[in-house]
Length: 165
Image 1 (cartoon, rainbow, N blue to C red):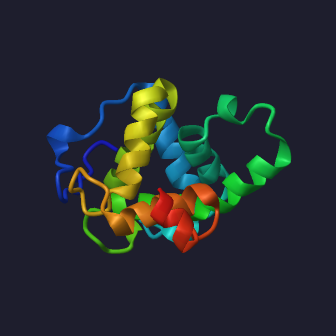
Image 2 (cartoon, rainbow, N blue to C red):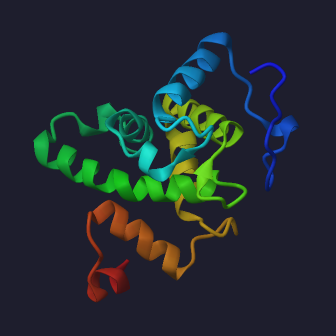
Image 3 (cartoon, helix red, strand yellow):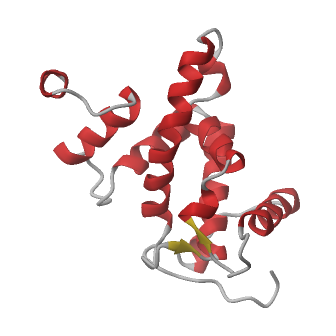
């Protein structure tokens, strides 16, 4: 978007914005136009609650190759967990805490998700870690670990499960 201002917040300044080629920029802009359904120039959590965005998250957190041969049960559990993953994404991407994503925040989130999905391995692990490290302390505390277990179990862990882990 030539001439538009770049929103800054936290450590997402203009110099640290992810680099993208023309194809990625077109993908981001097209997705922005489809998801900003109310035309408010910001995207809310409810606007991200769609299969199109969930499929992006699924490709990063649970790549298709990881689900091969697991059948519908795994796919169903993953779909249920995408809502929780979306909450984590919103917390990490919403740098100005206005409960919506401006274009700059949305772009950075999508490019990071795209890079993590393509690279797999360490990038996917870093994304998963960043989704759960809510206070950006570079460690997972007890409450954050409870969120990790809840996400991967698809339910809240029992006290014995939590204590064992």
